[in-house]
Image (cartoon, rainbow, N blue to C red):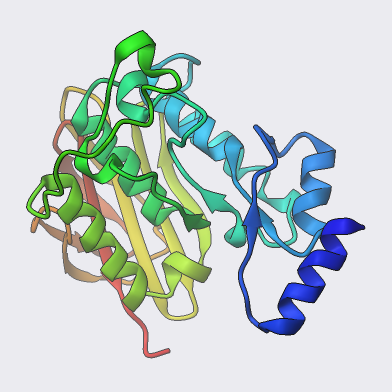
Length: 258
């Protein structure tokens, strides 16, 4: 009741205000945390998806991309899953690079963060590869000072590129999620909202993956990946013999009129 009254008072003062809070280490199969997300008038941090992404790349739990898909399959328990606040690390856990010491995998995790459903929240310095592995990166070493701000780093430009895409393609903010292909190391999904769509395919393995996928929820046409500049051709709703390089993500966009 306290949070319901608090959020009502805040939104009466500023209609349209978006608020979120931390229900520590909540999971979508824990009914009490789901009730909070659905009924208190604010969103909560999505610890379930955070764990799924970290397990996917760290191998701490088996399954690879199935760890991510497992969490998304629970979206029906939320009234507004697209308003959950998503993240891959924060002040209460070792940074992503302490769990997965590979900047290529961090870049892939950032692509997931910025193209899956939810409102992405980026922990300071993650886009700068900031990390301190002392004591496994546990508190306080997960909160180091930033010595520099590099706007030319690969991760900074990656985040900037995908944030610009979120601004111009509503599918990433409001769209439904459709998984077209998944195994431990390869993930292909689309986000769709009205006549806007985004297609993401990701290979986290050390070998190329050849994609042959039918029934894509995406318009036919010739596209250019926003991240790599590689061409992508979809014909008759299918992708044929498309090679995705190791530790690479492909993102293509079709922006509708509204």
